[in-house]
Length: 262
Image 1 (spheres, rainbow, N blue to C red):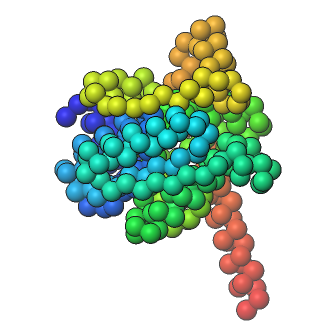
Image 2 (image 1 turned 30 degrees about the vertical axis):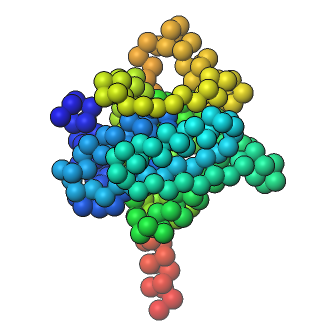
């Protein structure tokens, strides 16, 4: 087993992301991150008796390129002999009608499709391909927007779906970098497609990725990634402690009120 697969398996076991013999719906866009995740989980599936299926949402934001993404994911699922589910929507149109950003509309529609598919297939866990670089970008995105401790803590390894609390989202690649995922894909001849819009600086997240982070790494802190991830862990632990303390106080206060009423 390669070091990459071993690290994915270790994360799954340590974080209790997936159980032996369970069904998993893997969200796959066609990019290197999700294609790497799909192949990693598929490689580990026999050992863990996982029943994997693939879901792809076509945002229709890049014309023929979006359709080519869907085609690649469909072909890959067929090659791996996995069930494939797809849907699509005109995200720009929905964003305009709902008066929200294209990013927000895309996220909302994608999650609704994933949860709808999971429920229909009686799957309680959806695997997403977010990784360490996504965490760092999210930290600065939320920092610039004035987020509090819980927001700065970033994404969790496992969390309830925003569209259905009975469905769990897991992120097995959260401890791996984009560079490591790309190396795994190349070493294993995994086909994937690049999303050209990632290199356009129209969105704040892209400007953070393409401009701010390279500047900070080059001019201010070469070890920026480790520093930010460590900070996110600290902030997350503090935010969780405060939230749990507040919940305990609320339970004690409520119990006291009920006793006095008796």
